[in-house]
Image 1 (cartoon, rainbow, N blue to C red):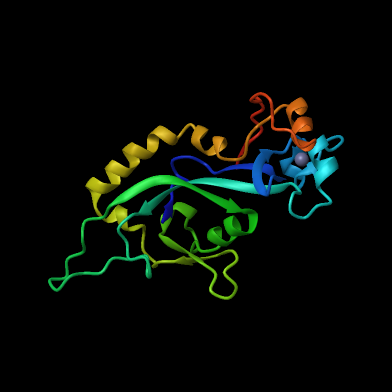
Image 2: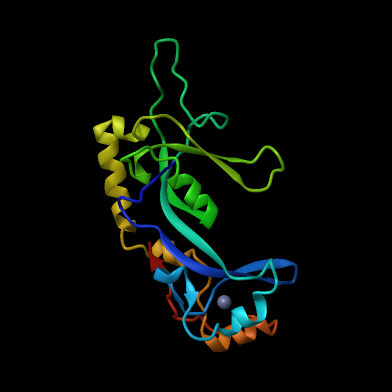
Length: 205
Ligand SMILES: [Zn+2]
């Protein structure tokens, strides 16, 4: 995969995973925080944090949503393409989607960049951690620019399609259900949220 952070900046929000009937549902945290001060609370924490932050599984956590390109027909083991006997690489099939990343995963990917490079300027692979199967390993594919840059026609197609997501709405929508204060109280009381909230408190990064 390669992230398309040159098209749209990552979106970031605090989220609670609230357990109900053995499942977990993502809700946007309602507390106000100051991004420039290590996300310190502004004023009192909201009801969700007051109730859930002592519970490791449901406490508020920072989550990132990033637009990304996936190489659909890449080798699942290597994430790369094998050349045939004539040295030709099969045509690249791709799709645009989004990646949900934890704070540490986002940092790890950023650290794969070489000096002077930005995060969108290389391909990397995502694989389940071999040691315990929990979490993911992110590895850089090569020193080069993403593979789809090597074909100007392809680069144009990708850029053209990615543009429709430049408003960041897709990313925001995937950072947990945004509910009102009243609905959050209902959720915390074990009832499903009645209506759809209109609180959009995601941040550009
Ligand atoms: Zn909260």
